[in-house]
Length: 157
Image 1 (cartoon, rainbow, N blue to C red):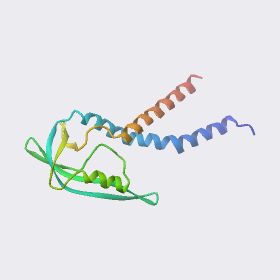
Image 2 (image 1 turned 135 degrees about the vertical axis):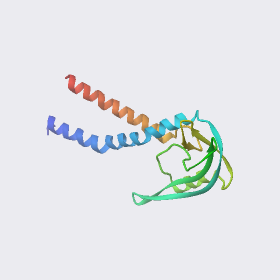
Image 3 (image 1 turned 180 degrees about the vertical axis):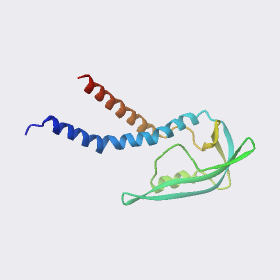
Image 4 (image 1 turned 60 degrees about the vertical axis):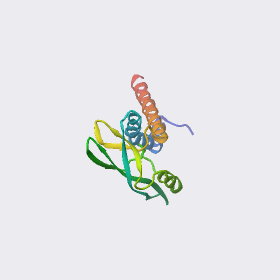
């Protein structure tokens, strides 16, 4: 059976919808987190106090996924803020991994808090981009560049 041009286009569209759209969606979700992670490496540091910690569960794909939650307070220029951002990641974890992360933070203890000097409400406990955000950002950028090259080639032919 010979594959015609119309069938090739249908296969390409299905491929884009099934495989590339989720990658592009993940990259758009993770890219801002990646950038904040990179920028956070230069943010000033202040002291904060852990006021609560827990593991938040979300049902997904017949399995639970968990997010470590560490709520802390900190002050900048005599104004107090509250946040629960540990690091810049959009992804959830396995239950044990989430438990390991929150075990690093003791209730009512001091923690180092890194805050955005331009917006003091944005802060984190761990600086730098998370590996998942980095991978999805680079992967998404690669897919977008590849599709752009395909479109340019298509219009030039």
